[in-house]
Image (cartoon, rainbow, N blue to C red):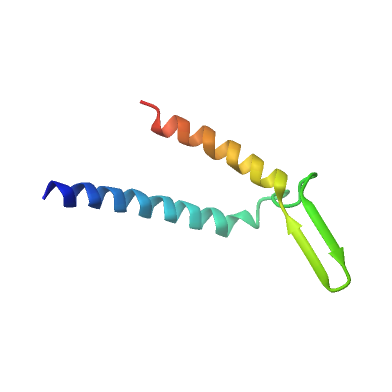
Length: 74
């Protein structure tokens, strides 16, 4: 039974993170500046456009790394 208890805890934690991620994605459009920072790559020619948010990804990665280090530090 202990294997199922550990699996249950893992599923609850994963579900919690999925809910947090979903809430962030819903609210991300309302945060000014996210996705339009200097350094983000945007290319448009004719009816083709390409957008890659390099700097936005870096900032989100740094913030999540800091938060997760505080959460999982023992």
